[in-house]
Image (tube, rainbow, N blue to C red; front, side):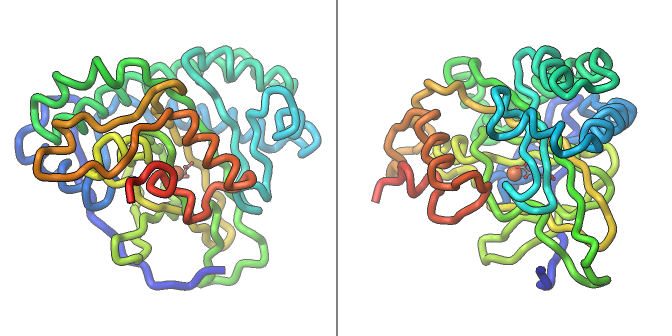
Length: 319
Ligand SMILES: O=C(O)CCC(=O)C(=O)O
Ligand SMILES: [Fe+2]
């Protein structure tokens, strides 16, 4: 169990329904390099949509473990991560794009879920919307390097990105005392380009500062949390930071989140363009194939999320 002092951080909140002014862009630049986290508003995902996914997903998560394990690590679909893999208090269902409807339907059918077509339709809608949001947000992140970077590199480097969603269900141990916390999801970095999280009002998401202090990312209604992943950190030659983060749970409070990962295609060769590195800086990473890094992480983690020492720098960093 954890007991450390935490502090809140104030991340910029960008209204993505209108063009960003130069002030917002510079706060985005600062947030991407300092925290690797920022927030977005006016994204078009309604609370109703989230609540519908929550209610349908709760039905699935409340099925008996034997049923859910039909989608478990040893089944053919492998869309379900049971308790005790990432943490004892975490389970998750993966819905993959680009055909989110088909992916959701396949899992729901295996579970003989009660509302298969509703589940499939609602995830189609969420996946489609998050795909559009991810593209827009990635463009903004590139613009934060300078206006020309989006024009130059968005189409050539990022147009084959793909998304997948993790529906995360957290339940703290019953034995937890009043002031105690449990790790719902251990410290890790994401392997994506960017991740967009819809967290509920419970809170518990924390990011590690450069000084090693855990900081709370306090939920705010209507606001999604965006973070930079490892492959974008490498592509940006460390101009953007893929920060370690985790989720802590408090007594008797369940938590539910939707994490959407926007990733390079498997065969993508990740290499920071010279212009991104900049003449005055040296190159930090060797070129690498995206799926080789994902395999490196999987093999080294033995099913776990975290483990320091297996970062993109360990994998492709130039000494
Ligand atoms: O549940 C959350 O808020 C974050 C989840 C997360 O970090 C992840 O799934 O990678
Ligand atoms: Fe994460």
